[in-house]
Amino acid sequence: MCGISGEARFDGRPPDATAVTRMAEAMRSRGPDGEGLFTDDWVTLGHRRLTIIDLSDAGGQPMVREDLGLALIFNGCIYNYPDLREELTHAGYAFHSTSDTEVILVAYAHWGDRFVDHLVGMFAIGLVDRARRRLVLARDRLGIKPLYLAETPGRLRFASTLPALLRAGDVDTSIDPVALHHYLSWHSIVPAPRTVLRGVRKLPPATLRVIEADGRSREEVYWRPDYVREPADAGMDAADWRAAIGDALRTAVRRRLVADVPVGVLLSGGLDSSLIVALLAEAGQRHLRTFSIGFDSRDGESGDEFHYSDLVARAYDTDHDRIRLSNDDLVPAVRRAVLAMAEPMGSHDVVAFHLLSEQVAQQVKVAQSGQGADEVFAGYGYHQPLTEAPRHGAAETFAAAFFDRGHDELRRIVGPVYALDHDASRDLLTEHLAAPGAQTALDAVLRLDTHLMLPDDPVKRVDNMSMAWGLEVRTPFLDQDLVTLAAHCPPEHKVAQGGKGVLKEVAREVLPAEVIDRPKGYFPVPALRNVDGPVRELVAEALQAPAARERGLFRPEYVARLLAEPDRAEAAAGSNKLWQLGLLELWLQTHDIR
Image (tube, rainbow, N blue to C red; front, top):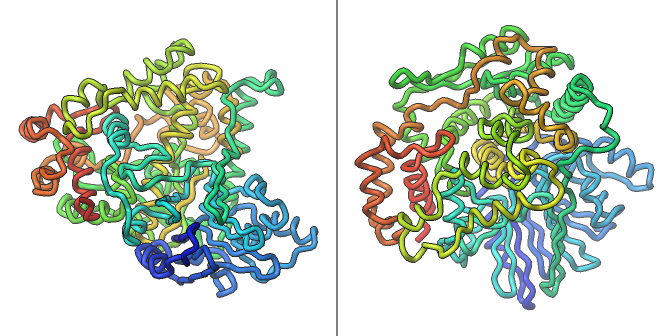
């Protein structure tokens, strides 16, 4: 797990190694254990290293194999690298390290562009093929590892974070009105390839981009499972699906143990993280390190779920850490979390994840987490009505349950410069849901959730907040084989029992019923959910700052109304309209974007 950066020039000028170094330095927290720089005549690569696999200098990056004519930087982890190494050794290749980084490099030498098909894991890759004079960029199937791009005539820069690109300079930082439309419609989600800034884009998940030395490039989506029933699965009943999903999840959890350092678990006390702990215990892990966080209660709303996390920790005899924080810790934590955000993220539990990661990183370098289970296995409330919706009605049903604001409301609240004459968010939603390869309305929405929305909400949240402290977090529910299997699973098995039915049946083999049948919970942070007290003061300060007035993102009368009547700020799925606005301005101001 690391921070990567690079620059390619297509205009005959040498790449700016100083700018690449600045980008890498901006990501020191992602890679506190080492640094490196590689320069060719038209490409420079920068790297910050977090040592997880092959702790020696032999695993350092950029990794260069002169005999193969290749140089590589890589952020992530390849879980099947021992198997690939053995296969490539039998094919006649030699290795000079025990790292997964070198396996990627040799895999490209052997399979060319198809090397990505062989990788099981999370990754963002920048590879220079010196003989062919090409730069290859690749991102993992579920977008777990980020890759941001800034393109200008004659030049391409890329980095693991958006603020790193800003550190290099010469970026168009004007607001993208379409991205703003998405942000205000979808709980602050801006799907790839857009970001809220016009001059920065994201390489989409499951995408390979090949850039030639003259600037020509091509992109290929190399993986996209169909959400349809497979003829080979026609005879499977509920018990068969439970067994298949259980086996795939056990494999996913075991895969994510590969490391030369200890691996812990972020244990919220919910079904997903509790199931990971249970399966690790079943696989023979003893004295597993587990971690939970809680806050002060507020107005009768509990600020922790320690009852459930304690229950699981006792059941599996984990070495468990309870981390309790007061609301006095919250405002300073908000500011630090915003600084760590590659993009503005309005989920109230971002700050909790930042604080949790800070504490966990003092104990372990790697942890598993339950993110992704709700998107893959239909765990959200809005999934239920989709079981009755016709295939052509998926967009209408989803929008009614998920959108924070409709297009007409958006036109009334954003500044005139940013108002769109078309419903960009509804158009993108309709396009994705109508695409072939999804059998039912729920199949189409689960595909949307997993492949478009999820990489830019819970996945990005986990990466940004954990890597701010040099902590690598792994997500078994986003294992590519498990996701493919779940895509083929009949929707009725997923929405059963109020959601995640097939997963709950797997859990009944190993978890107490009290954990499985409890009401669905989230990271509880009451002060952020309600935007009250010092948090509200922070939001008001950001929205009324001179920079906000000059930018004019939102109409002043709308901001004033929300600040005067915060009870009217509740949006879909528990999000908060006031927090969304304040968070966006706070992020822009924190990163000095004008």
